[in-house]
Figure 1 (cartoon, helix red, strand yellow):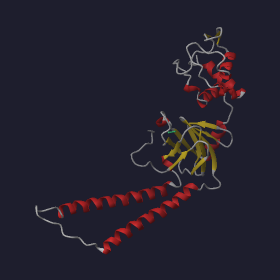
Figure 2 (figure 1 turned 30 degrees about the horizontal axis):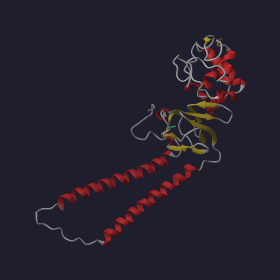
Figure 3 (figure 1 turned 135 degrees about the horizontal axis):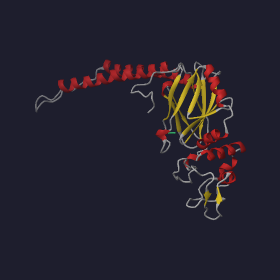
Figure 4 (figure 1 turned 180 degrees about the vertical axis):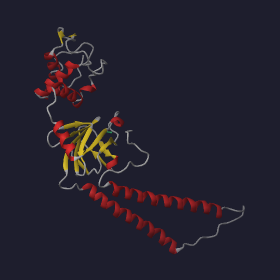
Length: 310
Ligand code: CUA
């Protein structure tokens, strides 16, 4: 759990959280009162109407018309109150204000990726301005996920092959948890992210900085996780599915069916673009060819990143 995990609902931090909490606690306290009433009546009846002798026969009971009407009318009124109250909140929750700032999100096993209007991107971090409606338009790259920000009281299933959106307006600057609340595979519980609520000026500064050109090795490090290279290639020497990237650059490589080669820039480039060309001894030919679509800039960045892993 994150730092701001609590047993009760965490303090609300969006323009709608007060309204949502009000409906929640209305239902909650109605339930508490009914629960106590039912249990108390049950305890009273158990004692009052217990069988007192072996031969005792219970008297025939006749329906009390007024009482029967009451237990139909009262719950119906309660349900209608909860419905009207809840429905009003539901409509607000599903209608983003037209001036909302829009952020695109992608959910995939097992991370959240966000892109902003100026081309900036962030992984595992959602940056938003305070006191301004934000609409997140999301889709999934693989299975069902669910986008949940407890402090904003929003939760939205994210589906593959379609866009789903959710909006909120944060009322306080700070750092809060984002969770995935739809079981999406082994690392579901680790599919966490943070939302950073900034003042408008800090947000603009962050946006500008996030979109600044990164040095190639830093961009490469970002691409390494963004493209899921880390699923198969470690940076600490352990062999996962493919060989580790640690100490790879400049090393003599032995292959299944090709002469030895020193791992230089051209070898790295070839192995990314055409993974089957040279298969390192002891590893399967398992890497998908899809990385051939990387842009030249991104390719250079990945190579630069691998070179830094001594
Ligand atoms: Cu994504 Cu659970």
